[in-house]
Length: 253
Image (cartoon, rainbow, N blue to C red; front, side, top):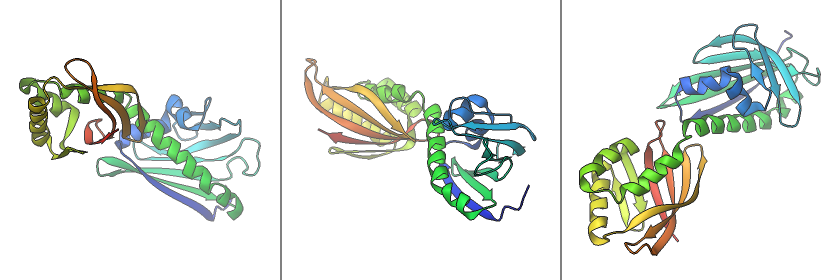
């Protein structure tokens, strides 16, 4: 390979464990999920790297180094040979623990500064797609978690705390116009009080959930014992790496 003196560096943090993130670098289905349909990778030294963007532009290369679950390096060039010839640049991706998530550090080395500069926004965009597909897969059952959150507000004391332990993080924070709570015990006591002062009231999700990188929006209705609506609003949930609810913020309409 020719000298590659010009480099582009980009670092992001994804709230998923390294072994989960690494799967999206080494399996065809998950590689294609963030590059484009038909993209593929053979994750062994000398294995083929193929990228086909949705606009039809193709890149290719060969795996240089792979160390599960922390490192992948490969050559990268245009399939047409222009502006980057085959094998004409090098990409290294390093994964390291960051809290309970993963720091993704990318370095792309080039022969020409102009070509490097043309890839700055490309990698900013591509790594954003990468984070989204990882977390979409990790939180594939988020609608179920949201429905259990709303259902638990109607649960009796005996079983509710066990349900909360599976659903929320121990340090869960809850905020709305009537709540400023911290921890499962505080939340459990608050739900008991809500049942006492608003007997028969229940919360029901309205429409689908919207998820982006561990943040979830869900609309809801408050329904009285006569099945008539009493109010409506939207909740913002933040999820941890295990899919549990770390925080819930409610906005009444």
